[in-house]
Length: 72
Image 1 (spheres, rainbow, N blue to C red):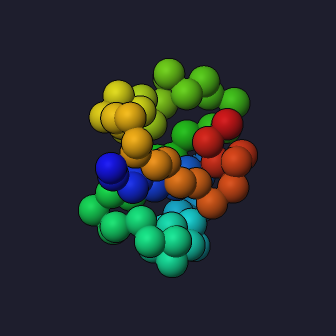
Image 2 (cartoon, rainbow, N blue to C red):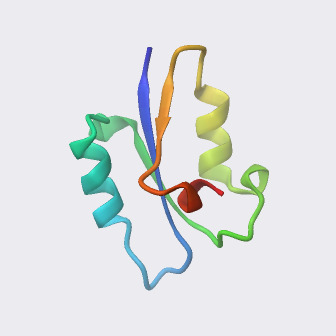
């Protein structure tokens, strides 16, 4: 069972640092955290980093996000 984290910002002027810090605090290993810069209006299947992560997930794995709007 793996523990994964996803952090997203909408523009290149924003940073994921705070989200990554929160994910680490929640026990997500740094090597299992992925970040992406893409608009929240973009469907998840059109987000290359998230799409790759979702395909890697297996039964029993956990995907953690700081806020639900970072995923949706």
